[in-house]
Length: 193
Image 1 (cartoon, rainbow, N blue to C red):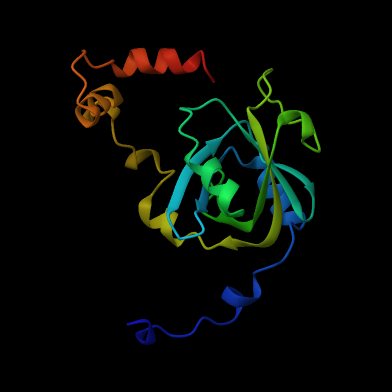
Image 2 (cartoon, rainbow, N blue to C red; image 1 turned 135 degrees about the vertical axis):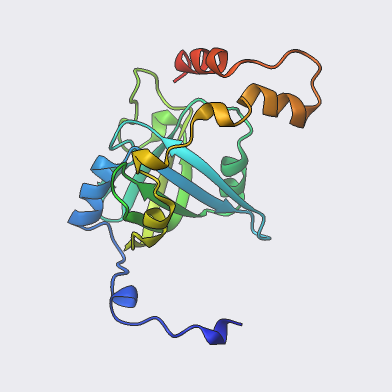
């Protein structure tokens, strides 16, 4: 099946670099959102959203990136996998940009106190910090986000067209208590950010 695809060529190969150059660093300074990918040694994958103020992914130097771990649901899916297999990938996004930045490397989990730089953002220290040693990075072409119209205001779907998260969690967990409304959930989450 893969033989039916033409071989990659030109810029699609040459664009991959082995450090965070000035363009990667500038993109990360604008970036408020990334998707973290990790896997167990036997291949069980995980993807998890990570977000914060632009620049929450802190560049220490051309080879090192700091990712603070904020308050979440305490499942620790990514952290458990990284503790067993340090290989990670990040897909970094900037609202309004259709291009994304892909970063591959190895993560070392640290306590906040042993992080090489201060990583507090909200007045509260993170639970832990990932120190990511960059192996390679490249800007990814904008076609997927252009097709998906991710940032197009006309493509926004009204939240009311889908069940509230409380309703979904109630159905998925088999809970019997009333579902939390979307408004109550948002209010509760605002105090935890």
